[in-house]
Structure formats: C-alpha cells, structure tokens
Image (cartoon, rainbow, N blue to C red; front, side, top):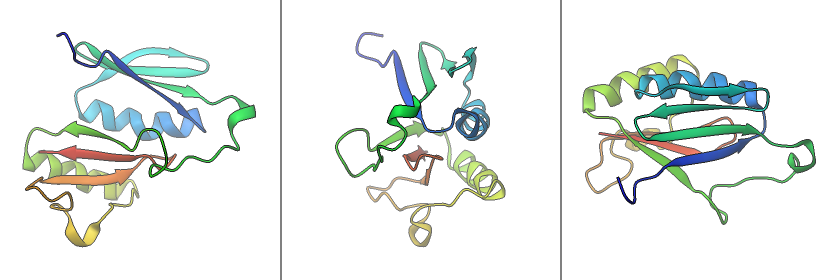
Length: 129
C-alpha cells in the first residue's frame, strides 16, 4: 500500500466530452464512478481514483502538449492480450485514433503488447498487457 498512487487529478477542457470518453474506458478497466459534482467526476478502482475537473475559463487558452513539461501519458494494465485486442476494437468503433498504427500492438518496443491513443485533450493513454 505504501508508495502506491492515491489519486490522479486531471483538469480537462470540456468535462462532458471527457466524461463520455473516460467513463466507458475506465469502466472497461474495472473502475466504477466514485463521485460526481457540477465541475468534476471521479472513478475508483480499489484504493486509487482518477479525478476529472473542468478547467476554469481563464485557463482554457493555455495549450497542452504531452511533449512539454508535465504529464506525458497514463499507462494502465490491461491484463491480457485478448483484452488489448478487444479494447482496440471498441476504441476504433468509437472513432478513437490508434497511435503508431503501423507498429500496433508492439509500438512501445521492449516487448510491450499494448494499444496507444489520446484522450480528448490529446494526452496519450496506453493500455498494456
């Protein structure tokens, strides 16, 4: 328990779009909705939760890029190659662009079997077997 992540809080440009994108994905990964309020929502899995908060209007024009300083990506355990294949199909059905398509599912090197994609704010997400 000591040293594991307690929570991650992400500020998003459009909370409704992020809820739609992240809600189904986190449910697929075993999370459940934890808290829901006007300016945010959280999802929990065991002792870790992820929070999404609507960015205040005064900060909306500040661009985010995952290659700049700050968070680059979130990587989740997917459990199996079969789950990676299933979630990849669901992502495509939802119109989510798979990153590094030409190398999928081995785009990460090091023998990772994974799917790589972006959330609505262009943060990279990995789900790894």
